[in-house]
Length: 455
Image (tube, rainbow, N blue to C red; front, side, top):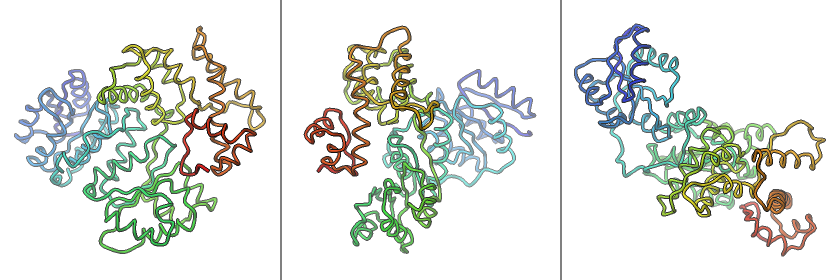
């Protein structure tokens, strides 16, 4: 590499490591812990590339990007930050940073990016930034794992394109939050954001009403894989409709839409129109290292809303990490809120987490046995793992009732799905009284979704 790199970071170790690595690579390096000094160097015409932290003792590195672009158009700025949220990635993209890396970063990766920055010209200066009041202060998307950082970068890249976006992921992962983030930080943020389901376009006038309401903003189709073929054809026509106020289309899906298309359940023309950009939102079990961060985020949010201050003990946090969270972020948030209300002390103990998680279903990995494994063997594995989580201690009292509850919830949910939400048929299938079924749905807090209508 050949060039001069300006490094701004308040961490002396990072400054030393970067200075040594860049110097060995053939670069000249000026390093500082002050944004004021960095901006002076930029103003003096020093540097071919800037590597800057975000949070500095005398300011915010992201806020300096427009000034750098004004003073030195074409000067690449690589942003590094320990504030690894989608806000940071989006703000860096909006301010037209050359690149963004979360801390802790991979040094060889940063060196490669710096080499590319030295070889390429900085793109055109950024457009005037929107007023802060036009944007949300915080997005409830938290994560420092690699899969989440990849997600943030992808969101930042597709944000201001007009490509349709297909957002996939399990229930509770935050698909609708991703869609909202893309809209709220895009050029369409002042226009409507409208979420629709099959019911909104079922009658003949439905598509026209939807298009009139969205007015060139963003149209999010919820669970596209559940929409019948006739209505899928209407969506295709909506996407192909000419006009000056065509909205941006986005869709969410829990299912494998490509597989559904191959199985004939989703129209090919709809699939290929919607998959202009595909965004996958990872399940919580795919980013275990984010679980304590998510729990802390929800504890802080609850405190801001007036709840007492709470924190997880180390043992409680480890139990959070060991749980599989089949309901993903939504289930995790509900568990935290329940603990905030029921905990007796500021520090939430492991036993209190056991009490909450012990009453909730857990997703077990398939371990041998194949399709021939008996239900009793599967339940036995589940119970053995539950006992193992407690080490040399016994689980809290009330185990029999908790296990029965954990068995009943998926049994009733699956039976409701199988009977199309008809509670009379579901009660007959289960061999229980209809009023008993209603009471269990209430007592077990089973969600009756739009596909399960109270009969």
